[in-house]
Length: 234
Image 1 (cartoon, rainbow, N blue to C red):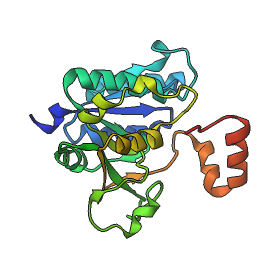
Image 2 (cartoon, rainbow, N blue to C red; image 1 turned 45 degrees about the vertical axis):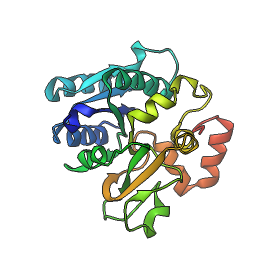
Image 3 (tube, rainbow, N blue to C red; image 1 turned 90 degrees about the vertical axis):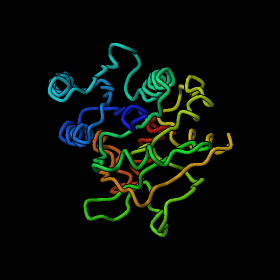
Image 4 (cartoon, rainbow, N blue to C red; image 1 turned 180 degrees about the vertical axis):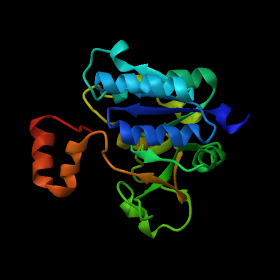
């Protein structure tokens, strides 16, 4: 089976079209197909995604047609994507809309899958080539290998083995994000999580949700909003 037949690639998108379009074109330029989940972007951006789909061959699913729940709808996205991947006997690769992959990124992730693997993530770099959020802890790691710490879904492959073992419809609907929970559950299931530090991707954190930049510029305001407005629940 060829790598592009063995993996379903998805990208949740919420506005921030300049970054999202870069991310999408980087993937389609690698010869892979993907599904974009439009999470209630502004009408003009939803239309822009449809135009991009006609141009590049990506599939765009608008979550407004799938749920009345307000954004973010990560749970809806990964439940739907899990079902499709299992039906196809494929792995599921989540690439965020603020991540730019390289030509070899996806192939390296897919080729690293062996029995007993749960998650395989690509380390994130900034524009200067330095390890950045959320993998600052990996700066001292020099070789790819098992990592039982939290893996983010910036650019992460969820193996078909994990997809069969962990039903996503059991995820807490009160949460917004599930990377921490799923990576921990993978370990509890006896699977191995791998961080590929030799397979970096460019990460421009929180491009689609700029209010989260407050975590770095005004952390007290960030956590006040997080708590009082019930945002960013992990």
